Image (cartoon, rainbow, N blue to C red; front, side, top):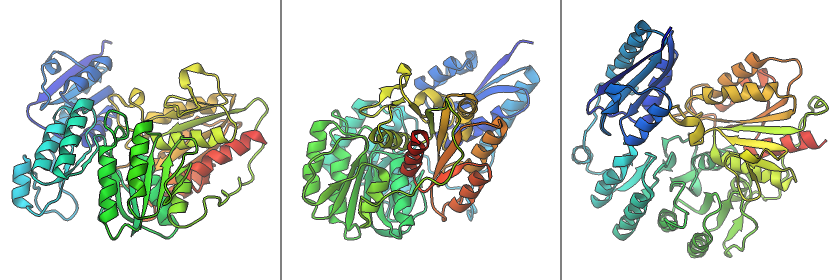
Length: 497
């Protein structure tokens, strides 16, 4: 039976990528549907649909402001049913709890007319248009958080330079996490208000540190995401420097934590010089960086766990918890397989293993680790949120199904001793990521299998409730470590016994 590909184009209809990814997975799960995607018709997205074999003549002519419904099904009836369901999802009322009417201004001007006291604009439009919308915001005296990705680097540089000249802050592009005045934005966790201000070029890095701070009895004043490219040589740390100035002036931010993968050397020097003048104690965690000279007011942390502990006054030398008793690993099983939804959590695990003298390979290697393509390492740690896994599919924090095949393969591999996985909770994340992983593990079965170790980034106040998620993992025989760094250390200890 031949497959059927059907496209429908909704002219001038925009929804953000998170909502579209959720709808896509719902449609893909219908009977007779092989794959489905709902995407804005940007050139980049049309390319993804071509690669996925989902584009037909109707979708080829879509523009960036159009929404494309693309379905591949086993027969015409299944395709038609899927398209109809997509239409229902797109047309349903989208009200949040407590709302009586949906207010959705179509322009920044209209939004400011209704909320003239606003100071921040959150931009979530296709990347081709995000810089232009952010520029409108900063020219009207607003700071901007750009959730959108696929923003050209040149646009980011020009936008941030203009923002600097105007005295405004641009968070992002691809800023997935922030907490401003206690309000979690995008993929953030519900944490207490407190005295620690965080600046991060990493969403999951911010989440891990803020949650560990909360679990140690302290709280967050602000968590400012700056985007993964901000500390590159091209951008020059413009937003990071601006954020440091803001936290320096903020009386609620008594201490500062800076989180990033290793910056460009000249950018690192510029940032540390700025840090030295803020007049507040600081902790710097450039995940994967070697020991560095720090300003007098700052200390360097080598893991997110250490950064969180130091920021609340706990010694960085505090020993991690010991590995609980575990079954003896079968002879011949030596490899650690890490399957991460958080890119910085993957980087932190690499840093822990390299410090433990275990060779590491990754699709997102930090200094000292090998590229995954070499295949010559005792451990393989994969960032499953990388574009190679998520092109046309939801990020694993939104839909954990992205890593199900990798879980099954790792459990069936007789060389794998330990499987590492992160569970990231919070607003915007999957409603039950631990339950999903537990079901995937049970489905894989096998009397003799690798040791599974997980960490849970989140709090009791998150929608998923951290203790509930931990219980589901433990019921499936998965060992739960107090932090991502602890999980990586336990994996090292298990294979080195």
